[in-house]
Image (cartoon, rainbow, N blue to C red):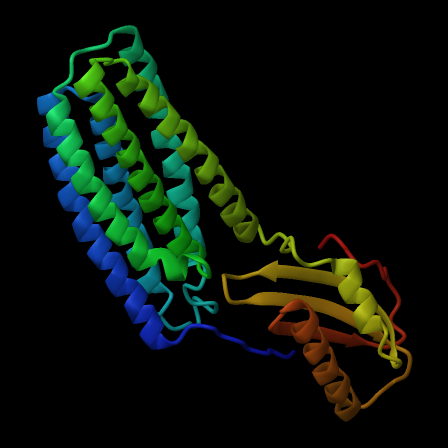
Length: 305
């Protein structure tokens, strides 16, 4: 058994992510309270829907914050991987809630479209501006980490879509103020909801694949097998498993059938060569190999356990 490690984030960066998440939680609590009050006073469904989305943001950000803290906890005898998958689970939960909220908004938008109501547009305009500024600042805080971390990307998407929703609400408020076209409130809510479903589905799919231990899309198993089998002393590579534990770790587990009955020293040399090959060419940083010689049995690349 052998493991090769490659980590891209320092402890300081982890603390910075936690701090940024905490700031965005506080900002979104303030925005949510303001929008709920404003939505009730103005009668604006789009403002209330934005508030609902913001409340969902608060829950999602808290989940992301807790997951970020859990990943720092050390492994134990009862939790041999620690909480390394906590952020993936958080991303999955956040994506699912994003879609659920969007579906609820669609029902509300259709109902309000059938029965449009006059809306106090001035309040809608000012509160949407506050939300744009607050969410815009939060988006900037999380943007960098969203490129490399699925949990942070889920939080970033919640905030980015909410910022865009607030922009839509602002446009709607201006249209209602100057043209008194109140049905635009429902139409904008519907459009916002559809957008949430699109971005939420992609994140849900990505996090689901990781949780189900699917092979990362960027990795071709047959190519990896051929690369390893190109080593002269190796006869066959079979019983292969490749999965992504979290954003930083890709694991390879395989049985290698050797042409000769080699010593442990020779095996270590081959093992180091395999680790270097798969890391340099495929980014796989955890390797577990079971050596075999003259062993009978199925030698297919994929064998159902």
